[in-house]
Image (cartoon, rainbow, N blue to C red; front, side, top):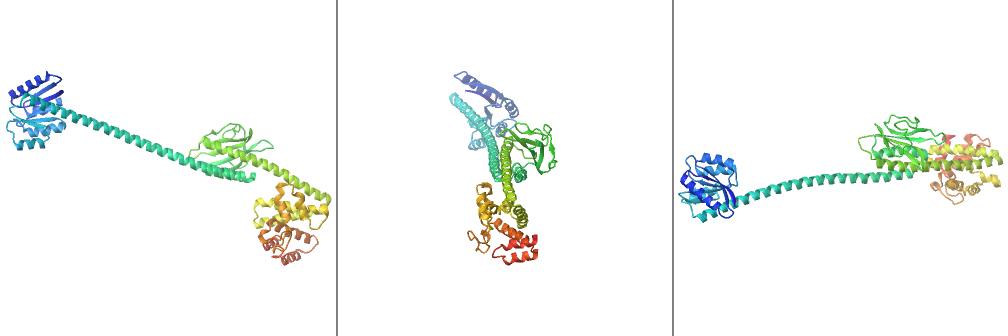
Length: 469
């Protein structure tokens, strides 16, 4: 067993004896001791601070200081050092004092047998090494615990970041779903263009939105809608190739100092550009791509629908021309009924989606007269237009044109609000125009209509009619 031993003893002869015994023990087996010596307390403490002994053999009575005081000082230098007190006058008080000051053991002068002394030294060294190993293990455990705590902290922080990203992604997906539903529910192109910037702003938290679209007639690009402080006005022409908005042929998003832009295209056809003004919230390229893909599909669909609507309107106009060729007066009458019906519908706050159906019903209500010359030919008119699916609501208005507000009319005896609002409006507008065409004064016309308010006609429609006339 290896060890460093310090002897602090004022009797030089005893020091030499101890040193000799340790030397002999050190030559046997695996023992090896490095020995230092001191003859006073001061010298001993100085050697101890430089030598860092494992075991100290300390005389209880030194010429310059008590051994118990030296023991305390040694423990302050190294709390794990093993101190064996040597005394010529061992008493219970001496033992208690030595233990109180954390001595390992004490021996009585003269020294015990060589074997006992060797055992005492080796046991003290063993205890010293166990304490040092314990301290080392505690340090390592402390370091491991600190490392684990740091790792757990990093894991918690990483988990917090992942959780936040997950929450952001869930919110983003939810908003994207609402975004898609909002766009898909809008079939009117003008309304869609108006709605896009507002929905995109809500979804991306951008500082502003610019919607640029291509005119299909002359292939010019211009600003069709804006939201927020973007420094761009409606109608501004955008030249192809010019920054920040003119890179319309790009395959994906591009950035400038203030904007993130993405082309709008569908089936290889360029439709325009969506530009988002940057804000504090970062907008991912994937989100922008998803948004522009959805907008492109909806724009293309709405443009197609608008084109179909134009074809439908041409079909309606062909019916009106047919009326004009057969009976010019019918065409003029239908136009007047259409105009009056639209004025009443506007004042009643009828939804825009119903306005065109009411106008078509007013223009086509006498179509059956051209075929059969009947006075009330609305059912026949409805039958003539029935193959055109886009006119199914117009057909419904014509079929119930002669329902009475009190439920006494035909064909189904519908009553009050159950009668389509278009039927109630066109019915009044038609009969007013027929009365006016007989040169009856407006006052008389209003009086005749008022007489049937609540029975034949809707009182609300009658009140609005009086304002219009």
